[in-house]
Image (cartoon, rainbow, N blue to C red; front, side, top):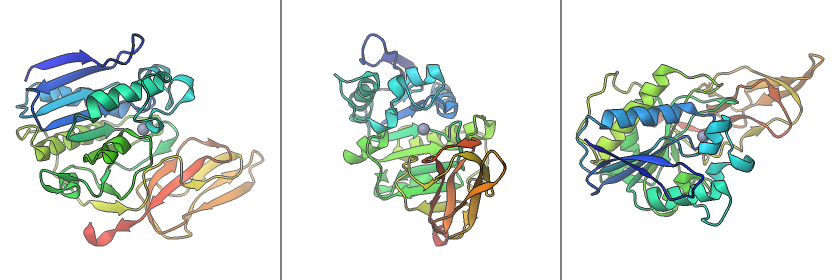
Length: 312
Ligand SMILES: [Zn+2]
């Protein structure tokens, strides 16, 4: 399938370069990578998906934007120009700052015309997350619940969100009644080949369910046991907060099942004294866990979300 390279109209100082596959007809799917500048998984996976689509039969239109936030990616930081979190300013503003203009261009040209949005994130430098596909619980794809589509991906955790925090790319899709999904994994500043494979296979499966591509053969095992996680709006700025400065030592791993009150970790002061014990506020799965050692009051130690074991 021939690729068409285009640049979004976001201003002369912004290179939002897309690769578009297909005839221009539907279904139209948008794939974003690099909304946060310290999450290389999404960028690399988006390029790899584009490579796969080059030899696939695309029935609809698939548009890939691997580098959604060039200023943040150039800096290698979560936030971009002016310390703005791009995932808090959608649908953006054409007359606003750099991040607002990026969000506006993506919203208008890639989200509003699409039938499915897939946003590729990861845990970034400061956190760890289990490999997972998050999605709008009310969404449908190909006439079936989006959960059914998520089940075709190889992710061991499927996070169904009844609501979503405002300002994200997926929030804009949600407000427009469009199905959306996002992927997370890894973190700690490390990159795992296995996670990249999950992303590529996950995107291809969702494209198949959407009817945007003919089935693509891609090496890898079928989905194993999957845990459906519910609760929480996926806002990574909220969770179990740390209240003292120091060094965080975790006592669980991302993806662990914990019970209410179970110890997640502790904060030690610089004299080695335990200054705070962090505990799970509820029973569930540790969907995000602090990785970076040094912490300050207000930092998130973890996000624990409930799991529906019966549906697993
Ligand atoms: Zn992110």
